[in-house]
Length: 456
Image 1 (cartoon, one colour):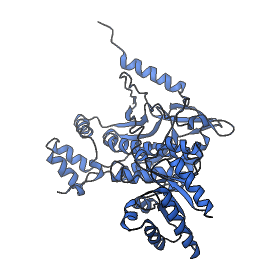
Image 2 (cartoon, one colour; image 1 turned 180 degrees about the horizontal axis):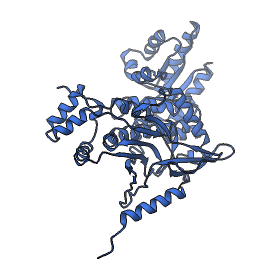
Image 3 (cartoon, helix red, strand yellow; image 1 turned 90 degrees about the vertical axis):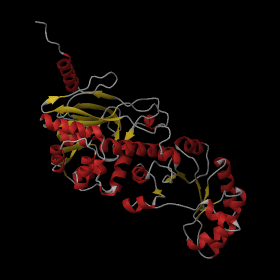
Image 4 (cartoon, helix red, strand yellow; image 1 turned 180 degrees about the vertical axis):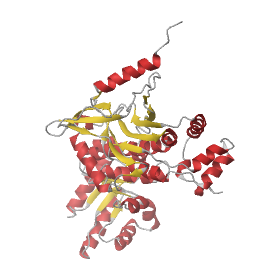
């Protein structure tokens, strides 16, 4: 049996299935609520961007164990035949409340809550954490890069250096939501309608005996969209060859779009290139830079006045080098009618289904969030409720959100974040508090869990 026949429902940790069997055999099968939140941010992150909801909803709508899945589980020699039969009949029948994709969120805030039969909710954990972790991490890194670029274009060049093909495709989507102008990943461009972007490789230049010949050949194929890579041999000579080709193109009624610098002192080389291009009357030819860039190096170049019009980013962004993982957790907060919490040292949770109330000022700038019970007090005129019902009885309530709408929602969110929290090395923390009602529920639940019977 080939692995290609196995469904995404089998993408789960073994203990999710062993717990599910124990739930089933012991009759513990009532409804539960699980909450997904990020415990502790890295020291240089003041916000994260929620991305991945669409993949989660697709997964839950399609959730079912195929005959091949059941046979694969039977071959593990771990599970009871009766339980496997129950799995073969299972699909997701519950409810999901979530923040809209592209929403900014902060420490300990639930971005998504899943309610339904406990077995169904439990089995979904691994996929949900995997996708929200990956895509939110990437979107946040991309948002920082876009902010550092200060209005200059940023392109995703990371497909070769991400941790697998799925990550590369998801990065392109997450980065586009966060403001990237395009992607070199053709599959992602086709899947999501993201503008494709690319130039040429050094291998193309070296294939020709003369660098100038490589530029001419490329320009013949792409007479109005060419970007020449000018640092294969000597950057100054490369720019000279690009200028000569651009002038020939102009005589034929075409225009060179730009040149790309991929190595060396990008500040000095961009200044030299801009001067040479302008002296040749090629003021409209843009300069793009790439080569190990991230938000910190881009911020330095921008602040130094480098005449660079756009950046191609790859390795450090695709792997989120400075913060390559998140502390997302998916915890049960309610079973049947009983609030649930965890009391472990440094990992305690708060009980019950929740809502996030975001307060803003008269300019609609975010002031702070309150994590409350669901339901809790009615919001005021300057408060937004962030968790919304997006799935009931295992079915979406609305069609998929268009990617450009998600991108616009993120742009609106980021514009409303206080300026000091957008810094790459923020000194301030966004205020998040628990509501009085949630504090009271937490105390009551803790007392119930720690109560000791009086000795007889």
